[in-house]
Image (cartoon, rainbow, N blue to C red):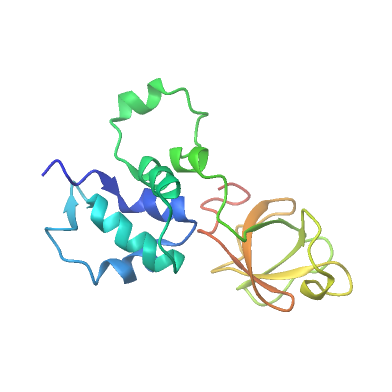
Length: 179
C-alpha cells in the first residue's frame, strides 16, 4: 500500500490542468493498481502518474520533467512540509514547477470594460504577445468558470485558444480578490 505516494490534487496543480481533466484520464486507469482513494484523497502510483502525465501533455515527459512532476505531487507529512520553510499559503507544487509550457500571465482589468457574460474576464497581458492575439485596446477575453470573485489587478495564468480568446489555467479564486 505504500506505493500509492502521489496525490491527484497536487498532480493537477503541477501539470497546470484542472482536476476534472485529470479525473477524465484517471477513469481509464485500474482502481487498486494505479490509483485508489485513501483518507478522502485520490492517490496514485508512479505508473499512474506517468500514464496521466503522458496523456495530458500529449507526449512522453522526459526523465527530468517526470522527476519534477513526481516530487511536486508526492504526499508529504504535514510536519515535514512545515519544516521545509515554504511561504505560507503557497502549494509545494507551485514552488517546483513555475508555470505550464505555453502559459501567459494576464492581469485582470475591470476598469476598462466590465463584461456582462459571467464566464468572461477582461485582462491585459503582463508581457508582449503577438498583436493577432489581442484586440485593438490591448485587451484579451479570458474564459473562466465564474467571474464574480475576480478583482482589478489580479494575476492569472492563461493559455491561448483563438484570436483574442484565452482560457484560465487552474481554478477560479476561492474568495473575492484572493486565490
